[in-house]
Image 1 (cartoon, rainbow, N blue to C red):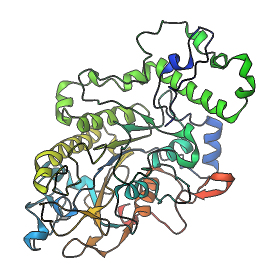
Image 2 (cartoon, rainbow, N blue to C red):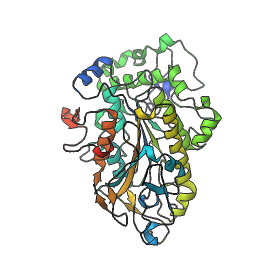
Image 3 (cartoon, rainbow, N blue to C red):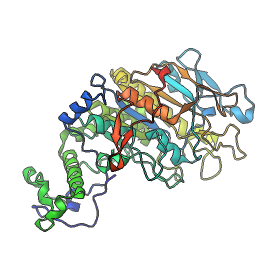
Image 4 (spheres, one colour):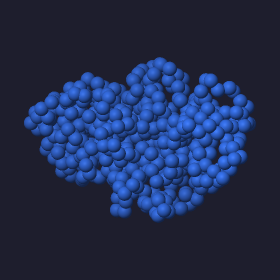
Amino acid sequence: MLELHGPGKVHTCDGLSRRDFLQVGSLGAVGLGMSEMAALQARGAVDSKKDVNGILIFNLGAPSQLDTWDMKPQAPAEIRGPFQSIPTAAPGVSISELFPGMAKLGDKISFVRSVYHTAAAVHDTGHQMMQTGRLFSGGLESPNIGTVLGFLKGRLGDLPPSVVLPEKMGPTGGNLPHGQEAGFLGKQHDPFVLNADPSAKDFRVPDLLPPSDLPIVRTDRRRKLRDVVDASVKKFESSPSAKLLDANFEQAYRLMTSTAAREAFALNQEPDSVRDRYGRNRFGQSCLLARRLVERGVRFVTVNTFLTVFNEITWDIHGSVPFTSIEGMKKTVAPLFDQGVSALIEDLDQRGMLANTVIPVLGEFGRTPKINPAGGRDHWPQVWTVWFAGGGIKGGRVVGSSDDIGGYPADRPTTCAEVVATIYKALGIDLEHLLTGPQGRPVPIVDSGVHEIRELF
């Protein structure tokens, strides 16, 4: 995310400083021109016949596989937990009673119950691998899925190609990057970050409108962004830093002056019944906003169910304070999630958008099979469940399985990289395509030998 509200006071031709002009905190990607897009299509990097968008739901904190989507009703009580399983609309597929809305949509959802990783059992490593396909090493940060899609397919109109709602992931204990930026593709391709709570009564997008204390100036004068840099620093203008700054200023300008952008974020245009259906909370309204954005041209939206594991009740159910217990998940986390995500799938389906919108629902790891003394479960990357809906992925399926106690994969072990490759495949991205990494060296979108989860297609 590029921050443009620093101490610089270079003035425009209208007497406004860069800082006064935008005061923006998060700026989206510049995107590709049509000629570049056509070149990528010609090389096969993108499937020109497949135009699929994505809404990635990331369950920060990591849901317990045993209490959600991979229950073990025959296991001892200290393993199976307190909840009952219920059938879904998919024959033979059951999930936790905590998700009645999802259960009704089981024929549209497919579960992968054998995901695992072998890295450190901290939140940040899972965030990286599940959103980029790789664990960051040697100072190399791989790009987020949405930023790669935006880089390859470009923007549609004034809206950015990739958006993160409601904010990027905050601290989760590892002090590492979370994989929600453009990485080696460059800051100019970072996603647009909302940085606001869409459920707030006074909700507005900070980066769409200029501060109220700025005078209204003529559009043609404000478009002269090259005048931002004073004649005395023309040498700076030709530098890579200046070009990056100008490119991001142009993106910010397009957002600020775009009627289409303001309309896309205007949740108050939705009927009260629709807003109520999604849930009048941050997650529910973020899901509704995600639908509005992909409906109007945003290619990829990431919705973080939570922002940190420290200051709010999340899926991180260790049991002891300040975390919640398994019962706390039942009271707080599961209901808002079930309402928001089931509303999203239903809404997209009713609008004829589900077939062209892939919805991956991910977490960074699973939880320990045995309930701890505090009534919770701890970090467990040895196995967990993710699931998909829409975007050409067949519903009503279960891929892979865990063992009798939900502790390790028993069938079809699935890596984080395969999950990411599946998302790329659904989006029409060639898994063999090479990106340009640091020092110009080629970096494959996914590592050699990694394939999509073919059972889902």
